[in-house]
Length: 458
Image (cartoon, rainbow, N blue to C red):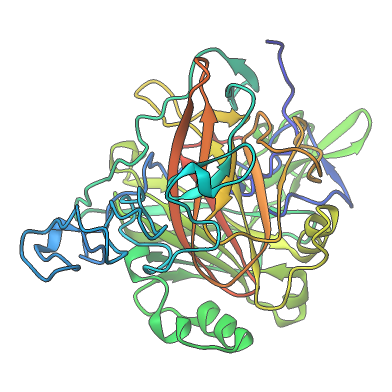
């Protein structure tokens, strides 16, 4: 394989690649991941190669509470009960058959329109994987080391698929930049709130039937969350410094192309910090704009199944997870390019990045030639070319680029589940597992999977 240069890394997710991959326009960024540390994929340094099992007993098969939610017994595992739609092994109803890692059945027991139990229920080159129909890739998966942007030989490491983390009861301080998808203003007037995935979504908001009311309820809800709007802004000490990559600039800066031969560091991102975040626990990270005059410029973003991995804590018990926002320009550009028109009121988007599991020696590598699907589909799915500067999806592409990016637009509100597959060098198709999430009206969900320990590039 030949070396490949790093493009505009917006991995919508995760993780991204972003659902709404960054729209070009305004200034362009240098040859590096402009998402700033893979944060666009929704798993910036969330440090978990699996989303971990909830320990609050929310999953019917969660043995930590000693109660089997599906039959009321105390054996804690009703793993063979395929009739209630809540068991982790329940694939008969198209629910979360394999996603035992977050303890949530994405469909609450009701099958989505893309659900399946066997290949005969799917069409064409699709196979039935993780309880849903997914187009099987024609090409074997390839790996890219995002630290060097060079290809890596070998098969993806999928050891983390379906594995659960055990919450330790310990906490850490989470910090990072508020990254941005698409061209737009600096991310200074923002609020970041971190929830346990087991506490999300709030039932009071999910019960609302009017999309606008639900949107407001979700974005303002704080009960049980850890929140901050006290951001640290980058100083002007590095402004104007020459650079070639984003990593040449301090955190909070971006390497901006000033001319065909000149790149300079410019401040672009607010920095947040939140203490007391539980480790080895699936999280939901919400980011929203706080400045009314700029409300039309942004869309709220929810990063699902981010995890503070206890054995990867930095000195002082710190862990980096970049929050992010998506510009309204991106919200329009991507669905239009995919022929989906505009995202309908009350619907949203999903995006991220496919990355393999980290090992003791390395963080996760992005996976090219993977394909994804939702149990309840959106109007269109998009993938990108191998230049991350180019953030407009390719209409006829059916698998991820070397940076693992994907996007799905015009997705309905409510519980859903994302799954993916790759083809191995032996020609066999392997599952990447699945991730459950709740899509808030008029918002972006970011997921990176199966691996959630990215290489930071900004």
